[in-house]
Length: 297
Image 1 (cartoon, rainbow, N blue to C red):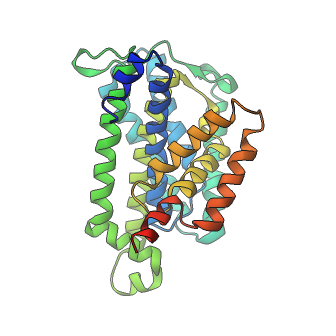
Image 2 (image 1 turned 45 degrees about the vertical axis):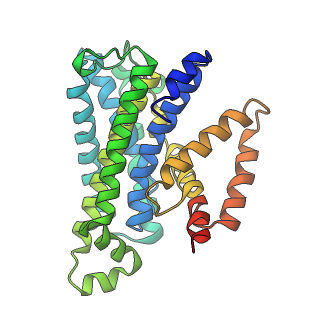
């Protein structure tokens, strides 16, 4: 159905929805990266925007200096975001609980102010992109439909990798750490190493999502690095389902569709979103996908 969606939107002359679904898929990837930490690793991170925004700015800065090929800039964006995650994770993972939340938030805000201080790259105003990255095989990046299919292919590939990862030995060890860290350590699981590796993988995926979002909007904005961006990703995850592989996909879809529908009715659309979120917290504490799991027994 997702393959035919742009063709149908073109047929009914509603290309806007192709762009909207592209954005949903990109944010779904970012939320899935957070789900690896929160849902499978038990690490409630409030600094995911640092990796997301870093990926976006890496592509923007490369483009500012005339480096356009996506086959160069996107992998570098992932690598730099993973490196940032390695540094932040190696320090943050020495703390637990609310201290872990606060230190990841602090690191994210530090990175935000670093990019805001780079006046050559736009500062507070952000860094506009003159065009999208050059795609391989002569694909036309200017076309929203072509970009949609690139996002769909990368998103599907990442979801397959995440699914295999959480069902592999690494993922099961990670879930054992989430359930009881002391017991996992007692049976010989290298807890710190596993959690740090999860942190780095999550950072790389968030960096790819950042590289895609900056190509779609053609603006590397400091708002991508702000703490409220991390909060928004966390809300999407809570809506969809914490600890479910497709929880991020469902959460991003519900959030952005609610935003789209409610914002046409009132400027106070967040009030409606808050009511929905309250209902999910009260009746489906692990997100909407938990209802599906409960129904299946």
